[in-house]
Image (cartoon, rainbow, N blue to C red; front, side):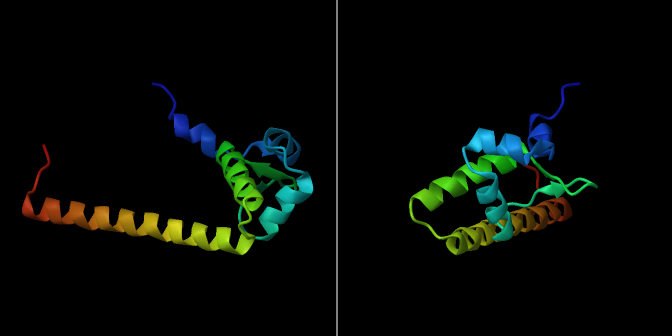
Length: 108
């Protein structure tokens, strides 16, 4: 059985130095984006930050927006709205599934 391709994308295994090389951002910039609650690395028992490939992609998006003049506060607000929208969509799908199961509706 093949591994889920999205699973490796979410594993937080990349050091800040490698993230810096991949994104072109300085380690200081990366830490700043963490301070601004735009990215959330895991920490090792020794306190080192670990990032995922998804985090790397997010950091590139953030850097591009900053370059376009968008403020970190605006980026954070946009991320909050997007997260809420995804949560609302998931909730809506769950309710629809329950209704379909209750009333025997099947999609073909």
